[in-house]
Length: 85
Image (cartoon, rainbow, N blue to C red; front, side, top):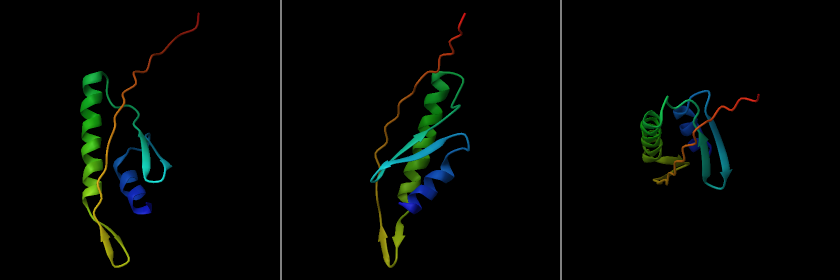
């Protein structure tokens, strides 16, 4: 998991957040991914492809090498700025 954390950390920007939810589950919060929904979708797809590439390379532990896969779910949340009167 340490190697995977390093690989995922290399993908995200400094303003993004990487958290381990438990076991082999990670959460990545992307901040500032576009000016509109279309741009946000394109950016999320690009990051998802980078994450899949990070899993493609084998993980080596001692003399053993492991090939793993991943499942990715994406949720877009539109930020609404409310002003108090």
